[in-house]
Length: 309
Image 1 (cartoon, rainbow, N blue to C red):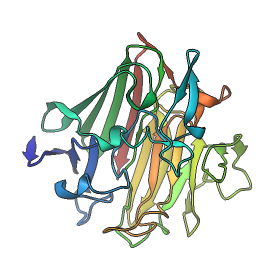
Image 2: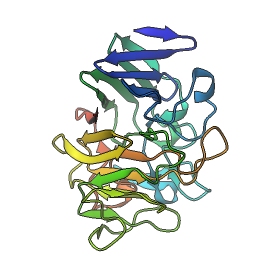
Image 3: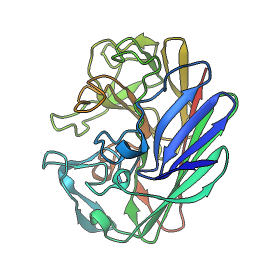
Image 4: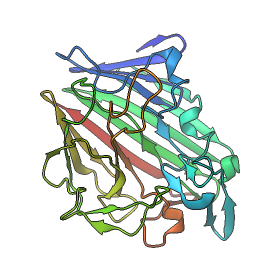
């Protein structure tokens, strides 16, 4: 384990080297042996807190959007910050987990655990919540992220990981080839709140067979499961420039974002692509969506595996 001021942690095993940072429990660099470029949009220690992309961060308390910044938990109406154009709650609000410095709880040559403690009522969410994020690098070229949480009172929780992938360091991700094992996706309103699930067949959202992203814009969740916790399984692949990523998760949703709004810094529009395992957006307001309720005595567990070849 190597720590460089003000806090990057380098992890390595096999052909993979990862650099993570306590700010947002973020993955800020990822490199595969034999490649002369990172596999994600990379940041240095000085830049990570200034970028506004949520790049590589762990998102919480609630990833994606909650419509109107309002919902109900255990009979209690919650009024949350509407930090998304003044309309919805996005990624837990402006003081969400992605904008906070986490504690390094344990670090070793190939693994690090970050912890954040969120007090009861923070951001309008009930329950004192403790979240841990453990990154582990394993041979031959595997990165695993384990997200776990406990709460002192009934609350809602949905965590996500937000790296932007660019496997060949092209100017855009248009030539990346994506495959997603989903029969349905969530269309979105003009404020990006999910609508009713719809079949992908016959639509531009059909990635069941690998295909090039092209110039299309995507910012939607794919329905890869119907329950809050699924068995660990392969749900997507991404390929470009001779590098292939296979993504596995326990989550019921996979959000695809083509980075078309990225800009204002080193990286331009469509310079990276996000594949984010998570719960379904706005689930607290939708009885027909997999539940995001977290209760005392029933810990939250969320596993992600990125396998490179």
